[in-house]
Structures are given as C-alpha cells and as structure tokens.
Amino acid sequence: MALAKGTPREVPLSLSDLDDTARKAFHRAGSFFTDLMTPSLRLGVTGLSRAGKTVFITALIRNLVSGGRLPFFGPEAEGRIERAYLEPQPDDTVPRFDYEAHLATLENDPPAWPESTRRLSQLRVTIEYLAANPLVRAFGPSRLNLDIVDYPGEWLIDLPLLQQSYEAWSAEAIGQAREARRAPHAKPWLDLLDTIAPYAREDEQVALTGTRLFCGYLMEARANNHVLHTSGPGRFLMPGDLAGSPLLTFFPLQLEADRSTPRGSLAAMMARRFESYKSHVVRPFFRECFARLDRQIVLVDLLGPLNEGGPALADLQRALDGVLGAFRTGTSSWLTSLLGRRIDKLLFAATKADHIHATSHDRLEAILRLVTERAMNRATSTGSEVDVQALAALQATHEAEAKLGDDLLPCIVGVPLAGERVGAKVFDGIQEAVIFPGDLPEDPKKALMSEAGPTRLNFVRFRPPRVLPAGANGEAAPLPHIRLDRALDFLLSDRLA
Ligand SMILES: Nc1nc2c(ncn2[C@@H]2O[C@H](COP(=O)(O)OP(=O)(O)OP(=O)(O)O)[C@@H](O)[C@H]2O)c(=O)[nH]1
Ligand SMILES: [Mg+2]
Image (tube, rainbow, N blue to C red; front, top):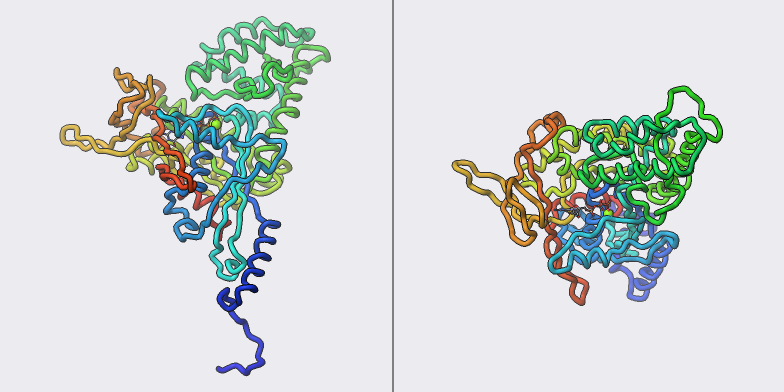
C-alpha cells in the first residue's frame, strides 16, 4: 500500500544520506559519548600456581593488539575489530601488568617463559570495533575496555580460609600434613607439634620456630612436587611485600574439640593472628581481584597431576573445589558482598593442550569436566553460561605421526626444556624431539582412579616458540595457539556485538 506523503514512518538512516559536515558532526558526537561511556568488562583469570595465567594474559593481549590469527573469534572473523591498544592503568593503587617484559622474555633468543608471578598487577586493553548493527555503526567505532588482573596462583589457595575458623583450618592442615604423600616433608614440623602445649602461655619463640618449620614444609611440598596442594596460607609460599611481616607468624595447632582457648594462651595468639591474616591480607586481595568480575576463565593444568596418577588428580580436584566453592552466587555466599556483580559466563579451560595430540583434546576436556564438576553445576544452576575447552595460549609444539610397527602413534614435536626426561633420556633444551606422551583414558573416571606412582603418561615441558618482535607498524607474525580464539569468542563476542 502506498503511503501518503505526510504519513509517519520509519526511515532507515544510512550514513551516506548525510552530507560531509553532518557526518563529521555525527562521528564527533559519537566518539564524545563513547569516550564518556566506554563500557568495561572485568575478566577474572583464575588458576592455581603455574596453571598458565601470565602466559594466557600475555598471549591474549599480543593477539589482540598485534594482529593475531583468530578465525574463530566472531568479531575478528567478521572484520569488525578496528584495533586494540593498551590504556594507562585505570587503578592508581595497583601496579601495571608488565606486558612488555613478559613479551620480551618470549622474544629472547632462545625464548623463555615468563617467571612465576610475585605480586598483583592489572592491565586495561581497549578494543575498538564496528558494531554489527549499522545504526550504531553510524556513530563511528564503538569501544570496550577489557580489564584483566594477574596475581600469584599461590594466593588463590587462601580463598577457602575466609570461610574457616582457626580450629577448622588447623584440623584440616594437620590432617593433610599427615597424609602419606606429604608426611615426609612435614615430619620436622609434626614432630615439633607433638612437643607443643597449645593451651599453655603464649610464647613468641615457639610461634617463630613453629612458623619456620611449618613454612619449610609448605615450601618443600611445593618444590619437590608442584602438584602437592596444601591449604596454605598462600603468602607463606609467595609473601610478596609481606616477607618478614608479623602477619605471617602463625601455624596450625593440635586443638581439642570443644575446649575453649584461655586468654593469653598460644592457641589464642595463633587464632588471633590467623584472623588478622584473613582481614588484612586475604580479604583485600580478593576484593582487589575478584570484586565486580563480569566473566571468568578458570585455567587448570591437568598434565602434572595426570603424570602423577589418580591421587594427584584428586588432590587438584579438592584444591580447585575449595577455591571455586567461594564463587558460589546467591544469598548464601559470603562472597556475594565482595563480588558485587554476577559472573554471567564462566569458561573452564584445560591449559597447555599443545602437550598432547589434537585427537586427545576431547578426552582432556572430559577429565576437566569431571574435576570441576561441582563448580560447573553450581554455576549452571545459578544461570551462568558455562563452557569447557582444551587450549594452549601459546603453542610450543606441532603434531606428527610416528610409525611403530603397524601402528601410527599420534605424537607431538617440540624442544623439551633442559632437564626434562622421558625414560632414560634427559633432554638438553636445544634438540627437538618427537614424543608420544601416552593415551589419555577414554573414561575420565579412570584418570581419577589410577594408582599412585608412575603412570603410562609422560608429559614433558617444552621451550616456548620463538616470538618475533612486532615491526614499526605494530603488526607482528601471529603467535601460534590452540583455541585461544574460541575462548575469546565465548568470553567477549556478545559484548562486541
Ligand atoms: N606448552 C605450553 N606451556 C605453557 C603454556 N602456558 C603455560 N605454559 C607453561 O606453564 C608454565 C607456567 O605458566 P604461567 O603463565 O607462568 O603460570 P601462572 O599461572 O602465571 O603461574 P604463577 O604466576 O606461578 O601463579 C610456563 O612457564 C610454561 O612452562 C602453553 O600454552 N603451552
Ligand atoms: Mg603468573
């Protein structure tokens, strides 16, 4: 039906309908408002020590700012990402994530992985993109600020402490120390505990000696076998700027159930310091890192525990469960007041997937599903969107097939780090090697059930690939990765629509 001239109707607005001056004014108004109102997305990168947080953040930023190959990152594949750049650090009280230094270690010849993180840091990346909607696009490019925080994974194990009393923590920590795998490391401290009377008068010397031995045990458990998780405190392992602080002078005691602690006793002193540690160290840390998170990626390194066998995997499951339990949403959670916002998308990622052939990635994902099952169910039941992926933020190997008799073995090729070994062979950190790391079990439950001791799996650590510096125009050779683009797609795409 033809409309009469004066009939109100919707006229689709197209930029080409405007003359040049109007178009410029339109864009100016657009960028004024986008500057003022650039939305931000806080991405929580959660992971225990050595899970791959720093490498993930560095690779993510490098892929965004220097032209990565990200075919499965929707907005990039649609050609809508105009550019991404680092913004000045938004929060004056938090140090900046040293992206350039981490990248420089990878650009070294030979390249090296970044060091273990010792303190909290933060970075803001601004992504400038064209909105999918042509009407929004008419105002010029849109922007999204992506805020990411990095921290030492050791501090994460403090999260469950906030829900525990000193008594409960003491019982759990002592029980753990007596388990067969930890007891040899804990012996000097456990022997001392047997000589201590918790309800006797407080004594600073006993506090100092006990802390020294307790701390020695935590350090040794980690140094000898990084998959031996303990219930912290995290700062005893990575003190940051608290090294030598009296806040770190306490340890668990053997307490009697239902016996009250007299004032002035050693038990009262330890409980007081435990509570101070929670309020002066743990709470501010979690407020800094996890308040107002919009999205979260939980990075899990399954390879170390898989090398060790079922008990190590169960240990990882327990440690993760303690940590992730704190992210429960809903009124019953003590963390609700800290979190402020609700995490609406949660990605569980099995990191370092370049250690196994692609044909095994779905089995790795199945094991991750099993290990994080409880946290995953909690998140889904509160309405968060959850996904699981095996990924490598920085791919250090490539795949090959080796013929063994009539069989073709799915192998990986890379340069194992110096000192890594497979059987009797010790690698020198220079020679490339073709490695068959073993088959992951088809049924993930078998991974949890496998006996302690040497398994049929053998993952070695590899040297990072050579990362070439960006040229003068900021463009650089893309970094190899596995599914980093799919992770970005899940975490960011809807906010770049
Ligand atoms: N092959 C491979 N190795 C990786 C990858 N990501 C991390 N790694 C290895 O895992 C180690 C730990 O990675 P980081 O990123 O430093 O781990 P983190 O979670 O920041 O550890 P903390 O700072 O100690 O909490 C690295 O030194 C590498 O050996 C990856 O994508 N591929
Ligand atoms: Mg780190």
